[in-house]
Image 1 (cartoon, rainbow, N blue to C red):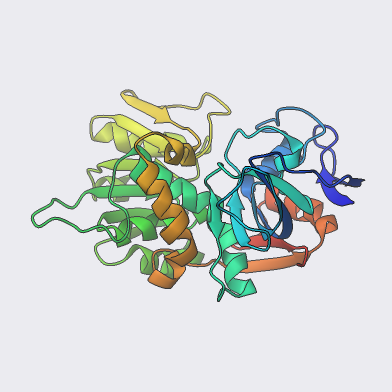
Image 2 (image 1 turned 60 degrees about the horizontal axis):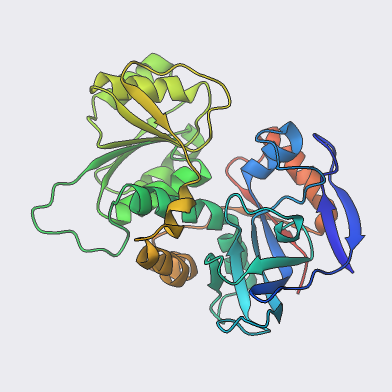
Length: 348
């Protein structure tokens, strides 16, 4: 039988149930899950109902590792026994694809199926499953949507160094972004809490500057404006407190697009000439013309990015069993964690 953790109604606790193990169709894989990465958006869905799931009952979860248990009759790229890391594509419908269960289906054409190197240990695997959703979004936003260089690309002689503002460099998405951009040859200006200032400075590299986000808003704006203008502005936090602040930075240099990492749950205040832009940023990887970028993400960036210094692991708290997930989601939605990521271990 398949053990699942399921939301039966809005704001209800996750309920553990036993269901039949799903069978893969012709183009699907059946994965026996070993590690589940818990993402912040899942805590918001489960505990606040924002954004709401497609319907109830609902099995959340997008990021996981495991072993291929069965393959569909038309699958040729994968074999039973392969170890894989998976990030479910945003908008995929069906509880059989949710990560919070022992056995999960994934389509072989999903593309965000990463073969894990044989030498990878459990700690490295846990670090990757905690990062995969945000890492794919970083590549999708900056290289897929905005056409910026990726780590490892050659910087042309005489090419102007673009300057990029990342508001929220100590967030998980923000940390990955400043390191990705620094390794791609861009100048990064960012913000951080005092607690994580040293780490963010190290990730963003020389030529960068980190502003204390606990300063009064007007002082933050002054310190960021003086280091502009910026070619790209991204608000990694994207709340009703941070969006107006980042909007004022853009407005001071004539306006433009403010890239956000959450949809606009409330109208919020945007300065004149500023447009808030949000989409599921990993979606650009699936678009025609970005096939090479997707191949790089799956074949190089994710399995070998930490080894190459293009991404860094965050502190991981491991918990055991699906029965632990509801408590973790509750802690996350209340702001507990201090920069650490949570990974659920189910065993192999």
